[in-house]
Length: 257
Image (cartoon, rainbow, N blue to C red; front, side, top):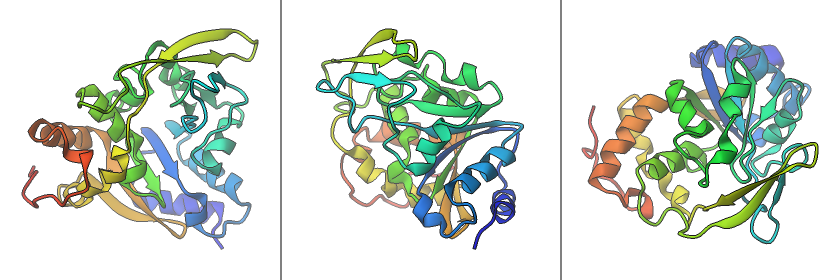
């Protein structure tokens, strides 16, 4: 059985910067049996990153839409896993105000990191928390999930204005604050499922040191560097803007550092 200490040791072995910014996508089931369950996992991550910034997605895109347009910051549950749902409710954690692609953050500059997301009409705008990950040279940790769950890649495509990735029209959505105040956030949405094809760049990421693998509990983890990942994707998407439109194999020499 895994313990808080064994999970802390795993994080140390992964070489994650304790004082940096860490975004975590996760599958609790993949970690295996943990003494104390999901709360122990969050305790380990929070303690390890106590001198930095820990971030988790708390998305609601699966059910916030034109037919159900109100995102309640305090009450709308995350649709991306039990760890994210428990994390957002923890003391000291702050959640951004984006109606479909919110994040929750704990630690250094957390309020600054999440502020202003409601000002953008797209899921992963360059000025939002997703772009701030690049500004902060953040690390992305994928626990028991692969690159198809890496929301950051949606952001890179958005910043490059890849054709067909966002709806042309807006849905009228609202962010509802704890005091009942409503903020109007007309929003464009992701179109289609290009994320199903994000995994096609895994070998290129590994070969060029953009990503490496390790373990956290029983889970296989992928550790990605936002700066080198962005540089790689900008290069690849400049050559082929439709890179993620299908899952066709890539030439091994498509990208070289």
